[in-house]
Length: 282
Image 1 (cartoon, rainbow, N blue to C red):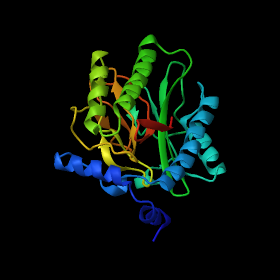
Image 2 (image 1 turned 90 degrees about the vertical axis):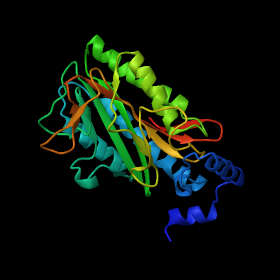
Image 3 (image 1 turned 90 degrees about the horizontal axis):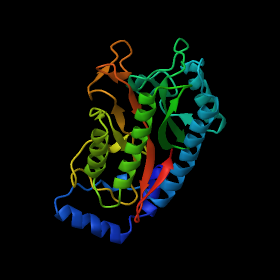
């Protein structure tokens, strides 16, 4: 039995939470599998991974600038991660060739670092970092504005961060995943933006991607119940134009807006607690 499985055995879910879960089942609500509810020792391991993950993005923030290549960002991420005894989760995940995702302007996500791709004054870029430390996973992304960006791009970046914050506010214990998507999409549309539907957040911690899928659109009181002990990412992808996206046919990874409009994304991982939530990565 693995250490993670041993923790499940020796640290049971508190009885009052199990009782509340059973009440939700009787109301025909979608309740998570008990393995999606992290136990205290799991959470401490995920916190340690999260500290490194946040440190990676802090290190990128110190160096990112116009003229550098996205491969240089990949180098920073790999070197910082490895020097802290951790592993870059994206590297070779389902064939992904690099250690980080760098998505510029109209790229929604999964931009692949390259020595041929430079950052230019006025660009906006999402740097998406995921870390494995002692078997525990963490995940976050930030937007960076390079040099003097246009007012339209600055507004998109700032409003997308507000979407993230609104989604986190909605992620309360015993609420549902649909509450998160409803809150994000309502705000984004009120600001004149569209929300990417095909991609979303997810559970994280013991694996790179766990249930539930966290859509950034949704209806209130639908989807999986958010039970204390769950850890999820919220990572709204907000487009300045229409919501449609396309997959790069050459690398089968990079997702871009179908209409060529700009896109932005911020991602935090959060722990659902009994009194609210705790931001683990940022």
